[in-house]
Image (cartoon, rainbow, N blue to C red; front, side, top):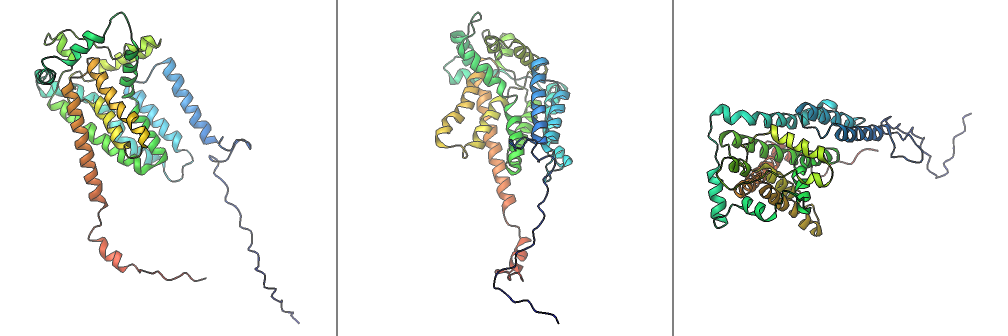
Length: 346
């Protein structure tokens, strides 16, 4: 005879479920340091390798080297990430890689199209705005000393150099932390860059140092990299000068150096607390001073760079607002969806 079990009123304990095993790339290597995983070790090794490469060979200015470090960084960061496949990450970054080559292409585009080089317009604008003075000439006459590297020369060199790394570092951090914000930032960078490249080809414009060599203004020296000497980083100075030698010399309008710094300021403006806004706003202001003082850009180039940023931000905001609007095709689906879904069965 089968004896029935009496209910005691206590809940029957649920059977223990096996805990999911952590991925090998997320499993701690040291019990006392759970953040030390194979993924963090590989990322740290990549960072160390990049730092050593920069110390020995210098900052990568060759396009192949730049692309190699970017692609290898994408692979390293994506290790053990189940939400992003390697091919997805490569497709995400492909526009940035193409952008580097388009910069090189823009160097000879104006010559192939036969467009004349413009410089008198910028000189006339600067003289009209500053009472007959060209700001670059005036600043170098009052601040520049060939024999002495002053503290503001060092700051100008650091700020000028930041243009070559700031956008890529910010894009990489956003890609790892928040892909949605990365998409918004990348969209603005690409729109601004292609607008600038299109202008470089159709309206080649010369900087102040070029105008001085042509005898159109008083002598101007190209001094954006002289501050590295005071820091003892002569190799960094030589690499920047080498990079200046392979870029488009008549791509002054708009100033993408200023435009990118202003875009960074505009993108993070709402996210930065009140106390940090003056520091954020100082970046494009110091960049503008650096570009004019060092002979890289006229004030007109800076102004037009700001106009390009304003147009880029406005166009991207409108595009994102349009994409976020509900479509007519989505209305029947919303109406068909039950307002109060039925509770799940036990």
